[in-house]
Amino acid sequence: MTQATEATIIEPLVRDLVEWITKEPRQYRDVIDTWRTSCPRLMVWEAASDRGFVERKLLEGRGAYVFATEAGQKFVRSYVG
Image (cartoon, rainbow, N blue to C red):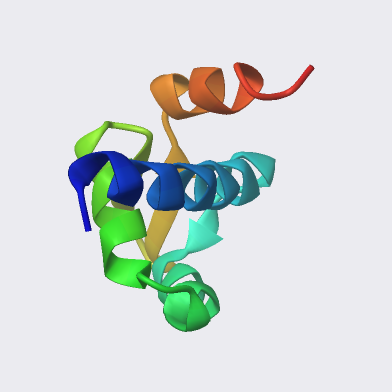
């Protein structure tokens, strides 16, 4: 698979992941569980994280949560009419 083909496949999945997280911060374990069936899940998570669209934070007494960054929100808005 070429990089261009890989990007074409992963791009909509990254957008879906980031859009889902922009609606509300998600528990890290819920993100991983929900995206377990997505193929290729880890590549989608890594792409979103590497691009700075999402970040994982530990919230005291609540555990790890995933938040959409400003860059992630901007990325989602660029696809929404």
